[in-house]
Length: 324
Image (cartoon, rainbow, N blue to C red; front, side, top):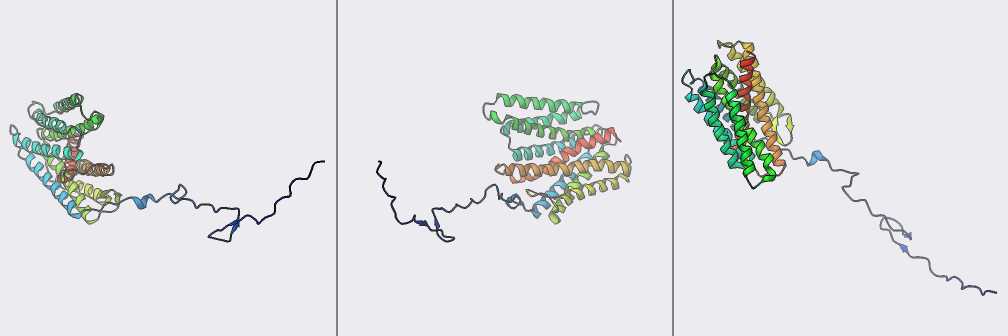
């Protein structure tokens, strides 16, 4: 017969674990609270987005620069005549130099000296190609732009540093080369019948649109197009409308235009100018959000009006030559 086993030991019950938020609970631990900031409670993105304030004095300064640039180009166009294109060519070359300076310093491509050198050479050759041929056509300017871009590509391939940023450098070169060649279309347009009047209408519309858009931003920068871009939709729309109106009024006094045709040309020039200026603002905001250090202050704010006139020039040429 098997002897009985040891009797179970009797003793005090298991100790209770005290709970700070309630009565003691036997044999149970308190669940740890859920961490803050989990996926169940995402942070508000709109609250963390910084709104860039509108600098009113800066908007007024840019408006003044756009107006002066337009006046200089319009007055320079009126100095041109048959066999007397050098003064206007000198004015265009000066604007091209400003364009190269502003855009290279604002974009800061890896091969800055190479990009600037190629762009300046393209500007000089493009002006010669716009003046020298017997026929006033755009084909020589296209050849110059293509040749300049090929030279820039070869220069990038020869360089040993910053090979990983070659695409960025070529993109900046393309924008600057196309911009300086676009200004050369004004010289070609001045050689065509009625071209000086067309330049007067187009550049006045672009200058008025750019200046009014910036002045409106200084007074009523609403509604904001983006929190990071200190521009308002009212200024963009109102500037384009004022540029179109100014061109329509001038068209009623010019021989080569009527109010309808001048309004059409002015609408294209003013619309492209303000959109190019706005696109420059978005590009600058993108560079700042990417963490790039800000570059030369004056160059960054000259970039918009110069880009607006550069884009308005070929648009005005196209609509004047092919539609009117």
